[in-house]
Length: 263
Image (cartoon, rainbow, N blue to C red):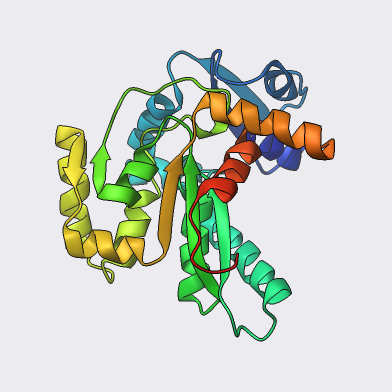
């Protein structure tokens, strides 16, 4: 819903690029749908699919596992499955830290509405690159696998729920694998074993040392639709600003997450 229109607009009319955009029926707004399906360009292909975002991601995963196919057709992803997007997002954090703490003499804390954990993974990368990144609050909607993973090490797959914040309606947050890789000190074997268990059993518990390493940087919360809509109403009444539902989740998290130091 968000990435699709932006990606299409970026490459429409490019002779050397073809873009194939998938969106789940009934899971994006009418405006977002029109931003995709009304583009008349020979290099743009848009498909409406049954199912949800997680089911789309599973289908794409099968394509990406076919290395010969990927090389033959020069395929890449435009979302945060693509590591390049996470690298770019790390730059946002580094820039923000320079604005808030030019001397890097105090940590800068962030609140991030999250679905697939790509933006938050960029924050962790920025911290490892030396940025003055302190704590990162990850705020989810009722599709709360990121919150459960961070708060208690519960990586279990549940039914994908449709919410008022559809860009975050994700149960398989594929960038969590990158989180585990960094927080395990690059132990690819251990992370591969955890992900294999998750794929086989649809649930895995993080070992306590790994969970503690995750919690050194991340805290989290889950925000209901009712809380999201109430936050939108409150901000409009107080400031005359129309928050979108995803931003409202972040604002709610900022207001309600306990803080031990200034943000």
